[in-house]
Image (cartoon, rainbow, N blue to C red):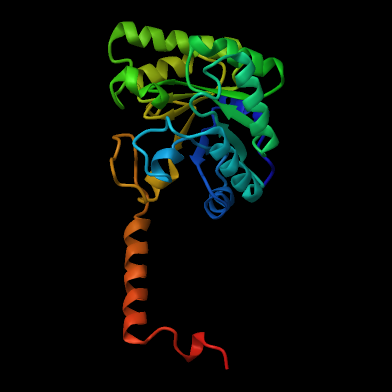
Length: 265
């Protein structure tokens, strides 16, 4: 498989070919996702919830994100690697955004993602001018959980839908190569996808988006503290792992493991 590039991702939209994206946070899973032929791998700040066990993404630091980016990047040969800019890595100002985005590229990412629409257009524009590929993220933005009052669908009211559409256009105009649409009604996802020339990547954005992204731990059934409507679980690795570990425990306690087969002579 050839290495996926920004131009290839944008070409997919023009050709009407769907784009696939998943998160990964470590070497083994990044290797599996890449081998499966997924187009883009996001080192998401969602690791704060599904890996670190926090209630939100707000406590994730740049150093933690860079650590996981280095690990994932070592495993990937095919997919486009996108680093998720955590809370406080770009909010303070343009200079911080550029500096931290550069750190992601040095750690092995080929692009970065940041949350927000028109309010962060100056950051997106500055990154694009520095030839740093940047992906936008609008709609339900987890770093804005306190303002939104929780993880709630955004854009059901006409006024809010209009604002989200304006955010999408602002992100495109600023130079983003793609934009994530999270937690919005599917008709709004369709409208935004039709209005933009850049690809839209849905996560709870409906079937009309140019591509889809899911958190890997949700897809594999490894995380079950909550289950958003937009998640489809394709496997239940948690139950399989639990069963395997229980069998190991039983065999150690009964003396079945290790046998001579697993011992040196």
